[in-house]
Image (cartoon, rainbow, N blue to C red; front, side):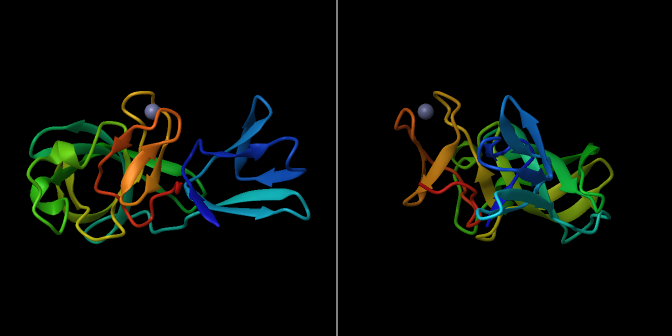
Length: 184
Ligand SMILES: [Zn+2]
């Protein structure tokens, strides 16, 4: 079983006779949801089941987001969250703010060593402010769950505590979640 985010490649039309929770494009199937991918090879079926969570988010909620900007001391994240009708809700009015002190359990000198624009992260809400959610990635399960090569934009694979590009061999550092989606 693997976790998908919307747009993740699930398989090809040749591989599967039926799919759920996927859309097709150019003979390929992609996930519609943030969810769990289930493959039945015998029946040639694929399904992505949405991760159901309470939509009311507040202190302690788990959120996902895309890193928009990173400065030396903080990152701004656009947050999304799966709702119970199997859709992904974006929170346009809520920026996620991740401060350097909330980024990791160990001391961090510069936020840019841990996060890069375009990274997909998993985080927990620490506090809700009028126009922002203060989030944390301090614990092992939080942090980057998917990232892309800064040289060639291919998805990076987790390998020996680093992220590696299988195409160009580039190695990159992040605050990697234990739930990082791709392993080499
Ligand atoms: Zn690369």
